[in-house]
Amino acid sequence: MSNLNIDKIKAIKVDKYIDIGMNDLVCYAIFKSADEKNLISREQLVISCFKLFPQKFSMRGYDIFPDSNVIDKRWIDLRDRGYLTGKTSSGIRLTTKGVYKAKETMKRMKIPKKENEVKKITETRTGAGRHVKRITSSDAYKKFVKEKSVNSINAEELRELLLCTMETPTAIMFRALNELKNAVNVYKRNDLINFLENLEEKYSDLIHSKGPSRGGMIKRLSS
Image (tube, one colour):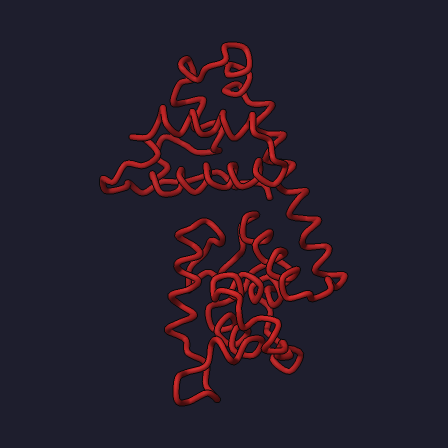
């Protein structure tokens, strides 16, 4: 992760964000301050949120300091909801869903998009397009189109669609499926949403199992 230039982060006028929820503001802060790989550290996120939105993220009674506890709760909640991925040790990155949440927040605050931000949005749509193409070219989807059902789609074909192996933990399979769902939502492909939701229902035990996960791997998702 690149160093964050704190001096370049300017506070946004209070009236532009005071009525906007903290989760939405955290998405925007990540979008605004992430590096060229779209990564931001937990510490950088704390500073970015505080510098951009001091009225929302300062400590009560000590408003010259950021409230890191509040910011931690917000980004962890966003991760649980599929808006971002990552952890403290490796950095935080918005998902496709998160980038579009940041874009919506920009519109609500009436902030014009800068060139690098336009590029991020374009890259997100391009990444979503690659996910959509991979779905439509998969054996699982071809069966679904032909048979109008997911009944004959086996677990191996599901794993192939998700770029997973038999050793991949349940939690990672769930995240991989959500990333595909986020991508098809970008393009408003109701047919693909229906396909993925039917697969999720059929393999609910495999994707949502609450048992202890085994160590495993996932192939790199293109984005």
